Length: 343
Image (cartoon, rainbow, N blue to C red):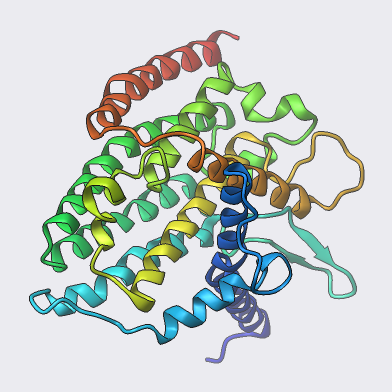
């Protein structure tokens, strides 16, 4: 029995959405690398890229061409299969999480009276899916460190594994308060629960909401290996860490995975705490522009932090995760639960 026309259209729309999301994510490093180098230049009182295109706007394109034609070196004693497979294992989970991330409210298409949703799928356990799938990227880092047959790469992989496991706990706790107040794990329903004015956003509406948001940002930066928590890539002691032996396009896949993870944390922060596509006031701005603007602000914040704060020692990193963030998160869960019951 042949499927009906509605089923065929649904499949086509889903494939188009997946294709659009994939194309956007694969091209994100082009503007983000340029922006990050410009942010670094301005903070360090220098212009940054200026020679390739106006204000160096084509510098990421030049870097991409260089990586494509650069010699792809594989260490002689490396596990060649795992060495080639590791960057893909790191990148694929980072891309997969975006099937559950909504970017705007649904709209009805005129004339055909069909609803268009700005997400691939609305999971009823969306937050759990993103945290679980995103955490799988650690396998690529561990495999890359192990397969390189280098002590520096191996140490970087082990550091990253311990770091991501530690901060995954605090990151998950930071989502609990949001789930408790919205009574849902669906990101669409969480955003809808923040509709209204500025004070309906979870950063203000949640009991001790600003503290939850700060914990989310700290744990998120540690999860994506951004300075001051990039101990798995510590150039000073590990010579770039788990990807020290990688070059050419394999190196670019690791970089793409890191940028995609940064965008994931920024979008999660926007959806969970900053009202998603809801604006603070209704002034006619399309919802998707509110979402993009908030996400951009968080990405810019991560870039500024990278070139502002020094790198922690590894023992300080683990101390912050286990002795500071997790105990505070447990207390906040108790406070949020009590206020949810009695207020």
